[in-house]
Image (tube, rainbow, N blue to C red; front, top):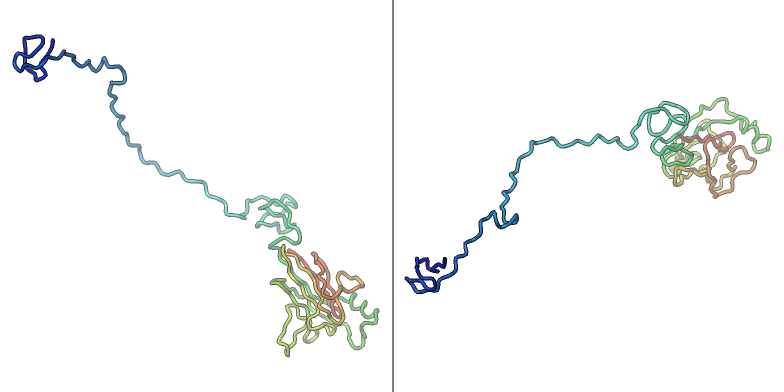
Length: 237
């Protein structure tokens, strides 16, 4: 039934009996259930608080280089650190440590060699009556460190004392003040340099002295002969 825009009740079908406005056709809004699924209002999902849970802990990490346990796979020696005490196996890189590796310590054992002394006498380079072989010389060890290790004898006037001092009371009389120098090289290696000593330097019992000012690579268990009777045995690790 037509209705008045102002809400008046009219019995006429075209104009309102009260205000005279044109009546409008009545078009009631359809119920919500007839508007399809899109018109249905879905209430929001209620937030349900979750119980507090402790954060998940990560397993502890092993410090770098820490022992994992177990014997050395090369020689079965019980493990005490990163490197095997017996063969030098590197547990971290799973490789055997070779001469020249970083971190490997070198040491020199200094003593008197009667065979070398006799060789010098036989070559006519020593007079045994003037320079007799010492009755006793206690072997001593010197750790190689720094960039250079000097071999020679101390000089008070120059204020110089070599790291391997072969002079003093009962010392080797055929040693120059700076007889030879051990020089460190990258990778943990060492080389020998003779700066021009008076009596020369030999390695591993060869007859020919090393050339002056020339680097000679050194290996584990090499023997350096200087002076009248001194031998310096190098050991690595």
